[in-house]
Amino acid sequence: MGLNMARKENLVHVLVALILSLSIWFVVNFGERLPLDIVRFVEIQGKREGYVYRVEPQTVDITLIVSRRFLESKLLERVRAIIYVFELKEGTHRVRVDVVSPLPYFIQPVAVNPYYVNVTVIKEKR
Image 1 (cartoon, one colour):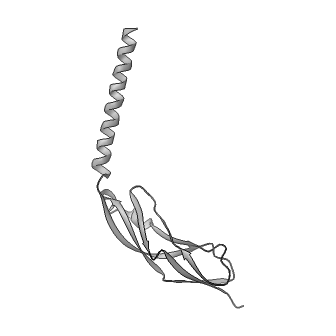
Image 2: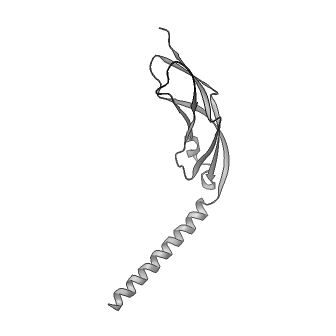
């Protein structure tokens, strides 16, 4: 019985050491986070056939907080500014811009400017 107790205690120490070492590795590799400003074209999702969508402005400024390791990453190219127009009827609408990041913890969007864009929906003439 004493041997089992010693093994359990040893296992606890090994697990604590593993967790600490992983935590230190994580902080060293991903801990420093820096601000980064990027510009993206606004992407439109939910277009209906037979309608034209005009967005003003066409680009937005996005502020990210990025782990240093990802500053030169191709993943930054996958940060997107999206508006959803599924239910918009003809006319001009003010639509909120959503920012999507491929790795939200390491490439974290913190601001978008402007937060809203104007979308004009026009029925195509046939």
